[in-house]
Amino acid sequence: MRRRASLVLLALAVFCAALAPLLRWYVYPRLAKIPAGQYQEMVLEAKDATLLDYTGGMQPKQVDKVTIVQTLKGNVEASKEIEATAGKDVVVWDTLSYILGPDGKMVSRIPERYIFDAHTQDPVHATGEMVDGDPVKREGIEFKWPFFTEPRDYLYFDAQTRTSSPIHYVGPRDYKGMEVYYFEQTVPWTKVPMPKKMPIEGIDPATIEQSTGTTLWYTVKAMFWVDPVTGAPVNAEQEIRQEMRGGIAASGPDGKLTAFAGHVKMREDYAKHTFDLVSANRTKILALHTYAPAGLALTGLALLALALWLEARGRGRREPRAAADGGPLSA
Image (cartoon, rainbow, N blue to C red):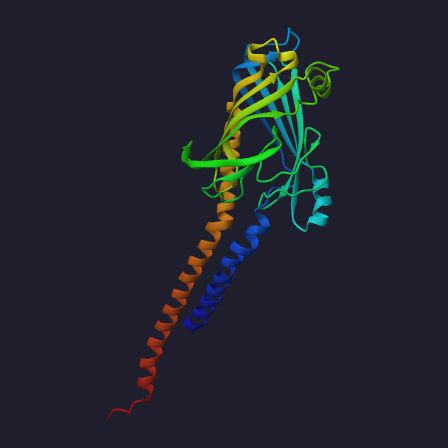
């Protein structure tokens, strides 16, 4: 009976030992992916900001708050079309940044299409990749870091300038009890395209630039607190400045007018929702990548030890009995 039990335990030990690397190296890369149909909404605010008053004499003024509503929607049909030729799982995000002034009226709206590998988050170049209608070819990451982010610099795409530059790893941080990696990127003053959708109907940004010589310039300090397991930012802040220079901005100091200046942060309720979501996904990824494979490996070792112990104990009992059965009879 003990021999049969030890054989069963040995079979279970082999099964667990074989399943552990299978989960880690085969199942994990195929299940740890960004879902193609993901939908997400985020509200950010810049309090006590400076905003150009387009309808009040084209002069900058202090406002209580500027609100940025960002929506992200996975385009499943587009991802399937690209996957047919890319040979990998692809995610297509159609995003929209909708900027609202203190009166709730639109300041600008910028659509964007971001195409990337569902597992590695590397960009995938395909027709339709754009920012505000302008075709782009991204290098590096945007929105999200890879699963199991490394403590190093990454190449990060800035949608305003349509360019990529290093985002620097600064060090570990504690964010609400979670150990995260903190990254910073500073984009120097750069001439950028004006938003195609302006707050005044009938204004064509291209016409303004060509006919008046007015240009838009931008700089930002971007800060991200990233969960290294999921690669998702649990918090993000930006110190943004935009200036109009020349042309209709000639009346301002040094021929410049501040179009926007503010410290953009997640609204508190959305920051909490983001943290809770990342925490839940973090547990799932760790279970698939670390906890389950390690648990199976340890279980396999324990079952193997138990099987060997039972076998050794069974042999120990059989050998004395065999010796007694084969010995001389006593008088």
